[in-house]
Length: 214
Image (cartoon, rainbow, N blue to C red; front, side, top):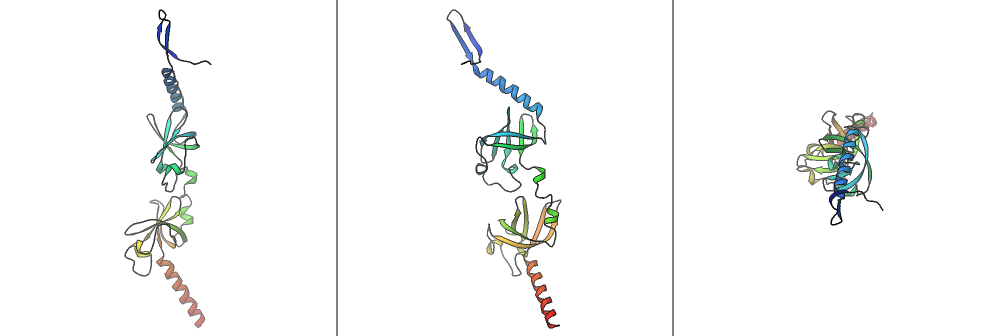
């Protein structure tokens, strides 16, 4: 078996040779890092291996340097725990989002998977949609229509009856069907109304009754 090392001490009188392999490994790593940074650029898709997973992200070995895949860049939707998505040794294809000195920021938010690309068609004003309550505030509930697309159901639009707090009638995880009453692509904001659905139903009922009477 052959092992490469750097001679750090040589004493022929004592017949002693001391080798340092660490210096060689450090030099090799520097060379690999240099080669990597010469090849990569922002916007490029590369393949790497998961080296470590933390609560805030995953470190990906790109072959010469590690890149950070932050929890906020793992999906267009919310990620609660990176350790449920990745484990050490996994091979992943990632997008190089930013290069700052020797730091590399990675992402899995590829442009062609952006859920807002066709959102203006799928969630046009007047469309009836079904989603899940993702989180609540005092002024309303945020409904997840799909991963990365949340819509606001304002407290005043939850019901025709007065609702003091969203938590009084809704809970996280509950499925909600509502009507899109406002859509803003620039700000990525969608407003919903359950109340509008009730109004529509009443109009249809009144129309049906009027037709019957005639």
